[in-house]
Amino acid sequence: MSRTTATIPDDLTDLMEGAISAGVFENKSDAIRHVLREYFQENQETRIASAVSLYDDGDVTLRMAARLAGVNRFEMRDLLLDENVELRIGPADMAAAREEIDTARNLE
Image 1 (spheres, rainbow, N blue to C red):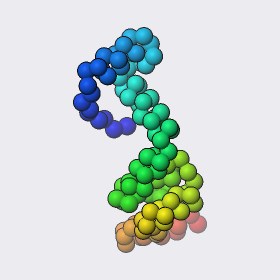
Image 2 (image 1 turned 120 degrees about the vertical axis):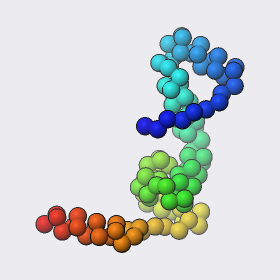
Image 3 (image 1 turned 135 degrees about the vertical axis):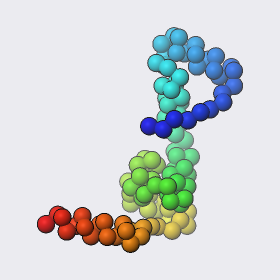
Image 4 (image 1 turned 90 degrees about the vertical axis):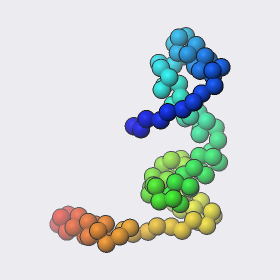
């Protein structure tokens, strides 16, 4: 799990601390995780746009982008094509290709 630092306005910080004190959230991290999860559940278009961007930048695989977007990999492929994002199929380079070959050989 990664660590992120954020600057939050005082009124939101006060509300978050009040919610923690009231037992709504366990701690600040729990509150932020909850709010982000809820946001992306309610804003599917933003969730998909984020996954498309991560895939387009090469930060995630098709499978990971699909998981982040909340769709299956075939739907993700179609979403990427709709956005004119070039699909990356197969190993990224010769080292990855050799690793796949070695893995396949070890399956025997």
